[in-house]
Length: 441
Image (tube, rainbow, N blue to C red; front, side, top):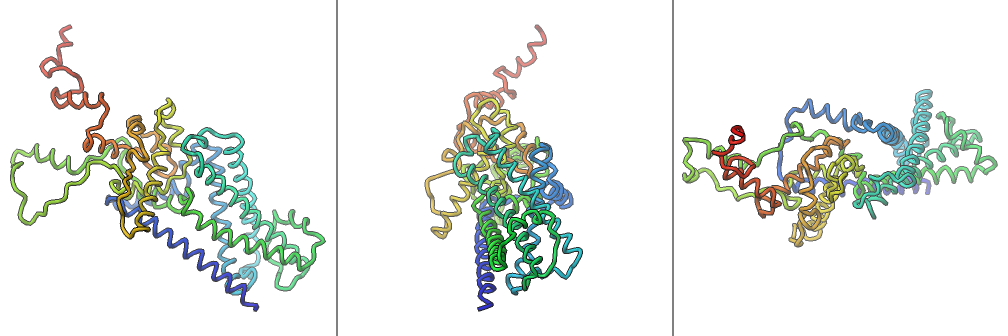
């Protein structure tokens, strides 16, 4: 009978980690649905970006209030969960505070965890106030209605409960240590929970053990639930921010890539020795014509799909977007959220049918409208503002390419300009011979 808690703990641990692994494999599979793109160059610069942006939170502090709070909550939550290692060992082997032999260093660790837990609790409460009391505009945009808004609050409630359980567990443990209860050796320093502990004065030893064990079990089970909740939440960025910043586009932000097919055709036209009517060599296989631009998620590259899964829905991109500020329909955050929603839909389709079965939907029109795409000024403000190196603009550009090159659905003004360039060599409707007539006036 004494091993039943250990067996139950192992079952919960294996089930929690197993389900998480299953879902993460789905995420990786979905990201790999995108087209290939080479992001293996400049490893030194990529590691530097990951260290500075993902780990160092360098872009978060550009907005000091939310940036500093985020650093406190993020680092605090991660460091506190180092204690999960001790909880796992204790849960498997039936020990209690297995690392207590570290003595003074263990006291320092527990004291640090408690202070951080308190700071996380304060930070999370402030975040909740910013969202629900102050109601910052970027958290109440149209795309944030329903699940996205609830998701943000659920994460805050999760962290509040986990930190409260951690401090409650320590406070009850401290009482049991002072009572000299069997199995509860004196270990650790408790700068925060020592103020909570007096609330339990007068409780019997059995009641204290029940309280401590309940908080311990709820804390570790809560962490496992939180781990698996990430797959369904925007907070998957806790994990994906690192690969996303590593595989970010290192080209200057103003540089827009050219389509390989178009580049090859132009180079062929400019080569005086090339025969445009020559048949392909015998050893060259005719490649299947590719789609120009993107109409669905499978037309995007894997780095763009990784971007979509990494989006934190913080809204910094949308708050900086000049089109959005002037009342246009475009929201860069919505572009990323729609891409992720469509990608999940495609993934669910594959899970259900074994392979993708046409569902009559596309990212273009069913999720993102041409009106949103053409509102973009290509200014890169959203890319610059993103704290984890996401580029909504690259998706917008690829979808506009599809509209122009596959559907000939560019706005009238753009069609006129392109016709002028084709006929006159300039965007203006004047003959090339008349281009300098203004100098005679």
